[in-house]
Each structure stands twice: as structure tokens, then as C-alpha cells.
Amino acid sequence: MSQAKQTAEKVEYNGSDNLAIMSHAVNYNGGLYKWVSRDIRPGEAVLDFGAGNGEYANRFPLGSVDAAEIDPDLLPLIKQPVYTDISQLNKKYDLIYTINVLEHIEHHGDIVKELFDKLKPGGRIKVFVPARQEIFSNMDEHVGHYRRYDKKLVRQILEDAGFRVTDCRYYDFAGYFISLVYKWMGKDGRITKDSVIFYDRVIFPVSRLFDKLTTGHVIGKNVIAEAVRPK
Image 1 (tube, one colour):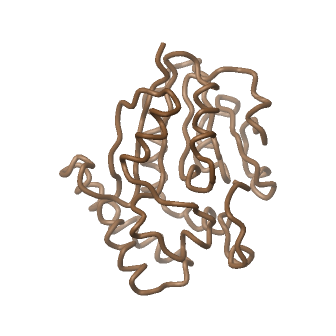
Image 2: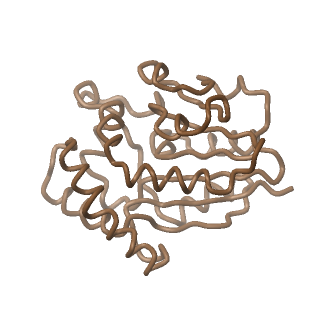
Image 3: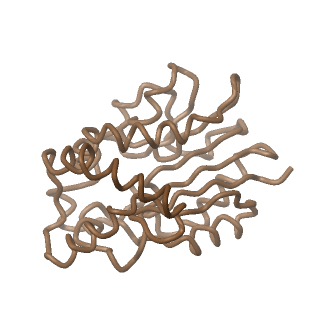
């Protein structure tokens, strides 16, 4: 998303690079797609807000979801109908999901209110963002993050927009501690294909087990939330 902060480092390593490497995280991406798609009913209108390289939107049948993305380098990778300005969208949606997007937007509360207006009464929103400001690191800076979140902040921006929050919890228990070590080590913010594959295949499945054991109420690398626009 172009709302991301522009830094000198981002010229060398940016969100597009990060998305390309993260495409190798098959367990991570598959789990998020399952979460997004699990309760979609036939014929429902769905919007992927901040679709990136189409990692999730492209998994749906062609034409069954709309995508919103404004990075010109990523637009050709999205196979669904794509819009660069959500004000162009005249339809209302049953579901809007946004994965690792709001942290790139300075005035995130204003955007969430716009998304509220794009939902039908009774429509749902699903939000996934990086968690815990204390693990904000060079990687966040490199890809243009304004912030990391906690459950309270996610709930606040959703409720301020008019949503009724139905679920809000932490996600990826082990990822929090690995990110904390990553920050302490002063890494330059880059991730590699090999490190992503190792984490995804070896650590992430164990991390998700801890998420289940703690019910997402203790800690995690991300916040995952769902909310409804009241009828």
C-alpha cells in the first residue's frame, strides 16, 4: 500500500520483496486463507482490502472477490477485479478482510470507518495485523509500518468505526519471542527464503498449538480480529 512510510531503506528492500518471500510460507498463508474463507456463503460479495500480490484473493474462484490495491508493481499479479480507490466501489459487501495492511496506514481509524461504510448491515470484517509495539524492529521500518498493535487498540479502532467486535485475540505465540530476539540482535530487517521456510515448516505449527492452548489471550506476533456491522 502506498500509504506506507517512505524511507531510504525501502528503496532497497520493500513490502513487495517481503510479500514475495512470504509466499513460501505455505502453512502461514494457508491458515489465514482458511480463516478468511471459512464462513463465506455462496453469492456473498467479498472484498480483499490491501490485496498485495494476490496471495489470498487469487485463491478464490476467478471473479468471486474484489481486490483493492494501490501499489502499481503489484496490480499485475492480482487475478481478481482490482480497484485502486475504494471510493470507486459502489457496491456493498458481506465480508471485507484485510491482512497485514492497517499498519501501513497513518490514519488507520479513518480507513476502518470507510470499510464500515462499504459493508452491508450485518456484514463482517476480518482484520489481521502485527502485534506488540515492544517488538517493533528494523523489519517494520523497512516495510513501512507505522505501528504494531495490541488487542485493545484493534478493538478500539473497530468499535470507534461502529463495529461490534465478536473476536479479538493474539496469533502466533512463538513468533512473538522470535521477533523479540530478532530485535535484540539488531538485525537489518531483511528476511530470507530459507528462514521463512524453516519457520513455517518447523516452528509455526508448534506456535499454533500454543495459540490453541492459550486461546490467544496471552501473547502473539499478530492480532486477529472479527467484527460485525450492526443491522
